[in-house]
Length: 350
Image (cartoon, rainbow, N blue to C red; front, side, top):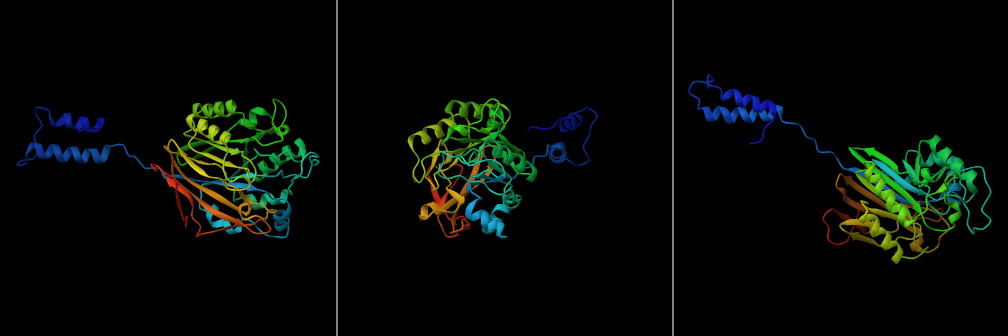
C-alpha cells in the first residue's frame, strides 16, 4: 500500500518495541484501521476539473442588413443568446472593420465597414473575434487600427491581426478552468495586401511554414491546447480542397488539438484525423445578401475541452433570415463527436 509521509511516520510508531495495541485487539486489525484513517486524513486531495466549453461562430458581418437592424434597436444575436450564454468562452470571425475612418478599397467588389455602435451587440455575447479574414482591411490600415482600438475599449479580445507582424501572429490566450489554450488566426484569401508587416498593421497570412512554427511556439510557451482558426477555401464550395486538407493534417501533426475553418459562406465537411476533429468551414453566422439555402445556413461549434484535448463537440445549425439574423434549428442533425470515436457522427444538439 502506498502512503504519505505522515502515514509512514504513524506506521513506524506502531512498529516500535514499546508500542502495544488496545487490550484484546489484534495488532493486525489496529494497523489496518489506523492506516485507512491516516490515508483518509492525510492523502493529497485531487479535484477533477470541469471541462471548458468553448464556442466558435462563423462570419459575423455587421454592416448592411444586420447593421441597419442593430441601428433600429434590433439584436441579431438574440435567437442564440441562451446558447452563447451557456459557454465559458465565445469566439467569432469579425468579417468587417468597425470604424468611422478610412476609404473603401477600390479594387474590391464588396467592401464592409460597420458602425462602432454594433460592438454593444457583440459585447457580452462574444469574448474574442478573429481579424484574420479578407474584409478586415476593406477601409485601409487606419480603419483597421481603429477597429482594434474600439474592440479594446469594448473589452472584446482580438487575434489574427495586429499593429505589426509579431502582433498579428500572437496567440489569443485563454486561461480558464486549469487550462491554457492558444488560439491562432490566419487568412489565406486575397487580397494579400492586408497582410501585416514588420512595422505596419494587418492580418496574419496563412503561410504553411509560419503556421506550423506558430503552433509549435505556442506549445513551447506552455499551451495545453492549440487551436488554429482558419479563413480559407473557395467561396460557395461545399467541400474542402486538397490544399486545405494537407495543411489541416500538418497542423494536427504539429500539435493542434482541433482545426476550425471558415470563409466559403457555406458549411463544408468535417473529418477525424489521428482522432482529432477538423471542421473545414462553419459557414456564415450573421450575414445578409445571400439567396441560396446553403449560403444562409451555418454552424455554431461547441467544444468541451480538457487537458487531453477535445472531449466532446457538436454543431448547432443556424439559418439566417433575409436581414441576416441566425435562428437555431433544434431538429437538424449536424456533425458531432467525442473522444475515442473512430468515425464521424451526426446528432441533434438539443
